[in-house]
Structure formats: C-alpha cells, structure tokens
Length: 163
Image 1 (cartoon, rainbow, N blue to C red):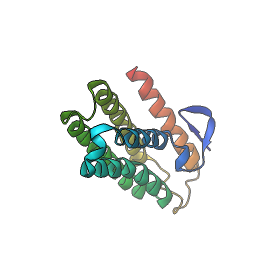
Image 2 (cartoon, rainbow, N blue to C red):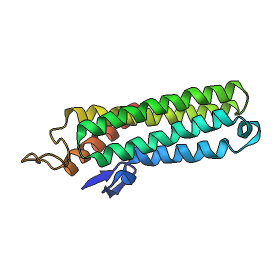
Image 3 (cartoon, rainbow, N blue to C red):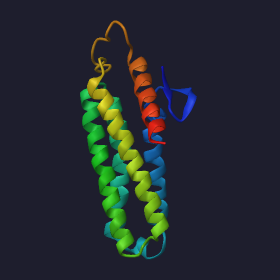
C-alpha cells in the first residue's frame, strides 16, 4: 500500500487518498467561496471559467488515476497541471479587476504553484517507474503500491530539501 505524504499512517487506495488531489480539492473549495463574494460573483464568465478550471484539476487527477496505466495517468496529470496554470491566469484577472485583494491573490498563487509542483513531481516519477499500471503485468520485484510509496518518499524528500 502507499503511504500519503500528509499522513504517514494512511494508505493510498484511491485517488481521494492522494495528497495532490486533496490539495486540488481544497483549492476548488476556496475558488467556489471567493467567487460567491462581492463584485466577483457578478462576473459570470470569469466565475464559470475559474470554477471549471479548478474542477478540471481534480477531475483529471481522478480520471488519470482510474485509467490504470502510468502513460494515461501522466497524460491526465499534464492536463491537470495546465488547468492549474489556467486558474493562476484567471486569478490574475480577478486581482487586476480588484475582485480579490493582494494577500488573497498571493495565497492562491502560492497554493496553485504548490499543486503544480506536486503534479510535476508525480509526472517525473511515473515516467521512470518500472510498474506501468494495473492493465499490465506487475514486475517481479515491486508492486504499484511500493512504486507509489517511493514517489511519495521522493516528493517528501524534495519538499524537505526546499524547506
């Protein structure tokens, strides 16, 4: 089983257990919250677009995970990463239009960059993984869970190095 980087004792059984998915979910909830407020709520086109982009991050992590191959998972993670960039661009529009303040803007941008980095780290690892997914025969030495545990360990190590 795979240990989550957010909780050393938990195991990854589904996409909902992935820390990057949890972070994307938190971002989406915050996006929905700010888009209900003030003049932002009246900019229907921007509200719709930023909500769709944030939902796309979560949805693509989920769909890619469920596809059963690393290659497909990577493809969907790249789409999620692109959507994360789209959210950042739309947040910049919201900031420029004075729908959100400076601190809110900076916090959102930081959160988006963190998620994008997590997605990039996961993509990098999956590209080099020996295990190619549940649709393929498992390699004799490592299971997908062991491979994902290594991903999480590597990501934690890289995050510790950045601190």
